[in-house]
Structure formats: C-alpha cells, structure tokens
Length: 144
Image (cartoon, rainbow, N blue to C red):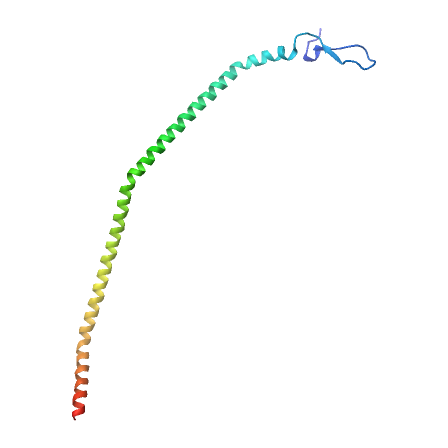
C-alpha cells in the first residue's frame, strides 16, 4: 500500500462526466488542526526560550540605561563641582598673562624714556649753543 500524504484526504468523486464537486475530505477530523498541533507543540520549548531571551535582553538593556544615566549624572555633578576651580584657574592665567604684558610694556616704555633722555642730553649743548648764538645775534646784532 502506498504511503498517505496530505493530498490523500481528498478522494475523487465520480467518473468523468458532467461538472460536479472535485472532492470531499476522506476524514471527518479537521485536517489543519490535527496536522499543525504537533508542529506548534514542538515549537513550545523554542518559543519559551525566545521569551526568556527577550526578557533577559530587556532586563540587560534597562540595567545598561540605568548605569548610563547614573554615570551621566555623576559626570554632570563632577563638571559642575570643577567648573568654579576651572574658571578660577582660567582667570588666574589671564591675569598672569596681562601682568607679563604690563611688565613688558613698562620695560619698553622705560627704555624709550631713557633713549629720549639720552638723546636730549646729547643734543643739549648744540641746542644751548644755537639759542645763545641766536640771542646774541638778535640782541647784539641790532646794537652793532
């Protein structure tokens, strides 16, 4: 006897002739229920394991998010705590740079003033001589 298959549940009805029903089920038991129940029953363990895997993944993800939030909160608190010290350090660095620039400018100004003083002292005899000669020329020249 040949092996039965899903197609065996339909048996031909009647001989060739006028149009009629193609076939009728050979059993009164609903076919898809009796055929699919064992398949789904075999998948129950895999479905349960998949649900457990999903639950584990959701738990892991929730823990990871909670850790990330805690880390972010701690980092923000640390940044807020350190902000004052960083501002003070930056202000001190700016003040130090300004003080160095001021000291450099004072040195340059003193050197320029010294150069002007030396120049005026060096030119003083010539200027005095020119002024005296002019005065003598203006006052004595008219009198002569």
